[in-house]
Length: 314
Length: 314
Image 1 (cartoon, chains in turn red, brown):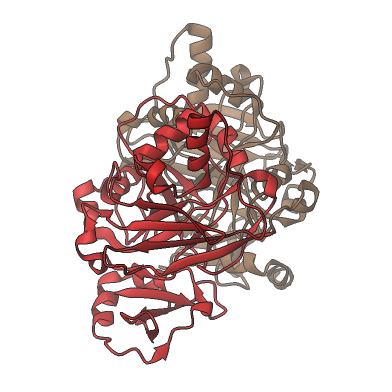
Image 2 (cartoon, helix red, strand yellow):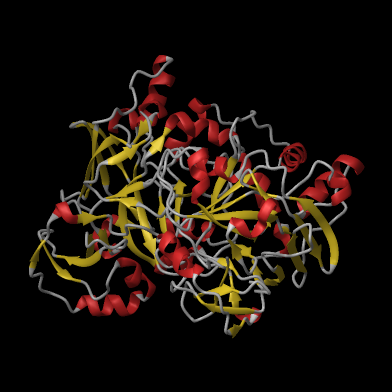
């Protein structure tokens, strides 16, 4: 099942089921995605019986599948990215035996084609290509094994970041706040079965092709997460319930051979330049710059659709 | 104006206006507080015309004034608390010229009398008495001066903390996640004018009396915030819009003479013991323990009502 949310002048938008070809849609049996997630089994049963898609899907009206959520928790579970960033930021972290994670702003997720307002070019504007999940309610203390069945939807996310603020905020111990403005989501939220064999051990086995101003920047593989999404969920749920509609991210998709496949964020490329050449060469984004992100299966299909958006002055 | 939210089997509860005596209430001209905040001027105008309070207020049915919010940002702006905690946690932070702040879980705020479920006694269960504000929409880039008029309501908060997790999470640079389960709120959200002269420079000039298992633990004064709430808001809004209903906290209320007035959290008392005696003597909370928090004006009035709740096993 593929779901999208259309603009309808309400904060949560209108939910539609998307046809396999991505060009047509049908009204979903819930007013919006948050409502669907709050009673997922009933929603899924009703949605399964819908097999005709009478309306053409206007991508210009597509918002984030979940335009706002009660909670957004972002992990950082690609070891090649974490190790490089610690090195170049001079962060001296003790080793931990759990996923690293922070809570970010969840009241706004930008749509896939929406311009993204930023306060200033001086803040080090960067994209971060990620995978994410949307869950139904997870009680406090749920194990990683039990968490798996609460993964209802997969999404593709651009976790916008302001790098001039990120390092200093880490050093306070309070984590990121100003460094993390709202994220964007690709058009379609999909049930895990849509990925077939490319969904393994709660990990998305797709390539994430990232282009910046029309030029390919990275094509990293989503598989090598140090922790599966079910383990990330169990970590988050240790001391709190997770409400239906909580969104959880993987952190920047990254591979050990990033020099070959490229990166999913500018900071990682700059990190490589610092290690290889002594200083960064690649600048951060400017107003008017665009980024495109598409996650591709081995057969070339792009199950989430594409993010393609421009940074503008707030 | 004093507002409370009553249980009505919906996630957001039912909003009421509370009489000056705190014993009676009237239906508010908005279904819930979130709705009121989204059109505050219209709400406030309609609410002003309500002068009779026909219903008795059943405190047992009172929830948090805002039982869930799109965003909860907690500062740490009492210098005496921050300096002591850094010292005893061994956190070596560079000095910063802005309020320290993290984003916490906002989908749940416990009511003032509700039992609070915690995962384990081994996690160092602690209370944190704080003041907070609830705002209407603040655009990105709003200055501290302009932020002031967006402070719509004041609240009193217990920011539950798990100290065994807090120090290690700070050292990762990602900040607190497991260390911060949902907070609680005192019964009444009040407009700033309810405090009269005790609301100065966006700071609450009240004493916060905290009792643990019936024994007074602290009575710190709210005035000496290093940053007013308007400055905290401007910091948060530098790179993001703040949606209506965003809740912002002061961090643990603390005074330089904490050896005389006591503390608003156990961690601070333990910190004093470490400094004075070489090691902490006071243990953290156990299941079945209770905490009471009341903010008092100089005339003895308690404008927010009282938090009085018990910790239980989740």
